[in-house]
Length: 103
Image 1 (spheres, rainbow, N blue to C red):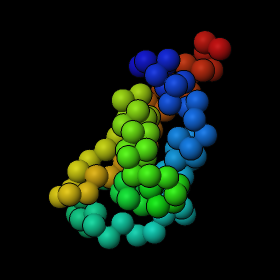
Image 2 (cartoon, helix red, strand yellow):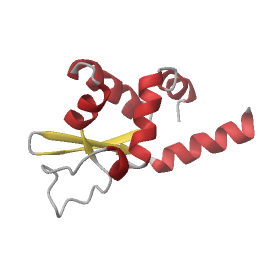
Image 3 (cartoon, rainbow, N blue to C red):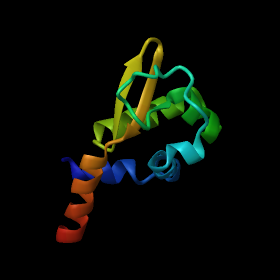
Image 4 (cartoon, one colour):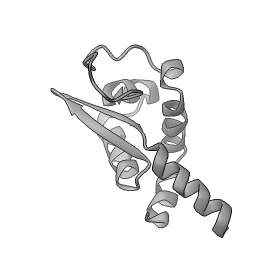
């Protein structure tokens, strides 16, 4: 776990907001119509849905999501031409433990 990369990812208000939205995706996003019903990726949200909610350019959102994925805060899966993201709860838990025990 690269804590410096996680802190960098969390240093942007929009990235933190995305993590918050993805904590309760059913509340913050509409149905993910392109996610196959048999897909084993519960809580996954399409990049386009995240981009639409933020109102930022798709390229900006893609770079934000990539940074958060590289930091271990998100995981992604591709279905056809669509990429879906969800929180990586295991790594978020490890980071939470790190904060509790080291800061």
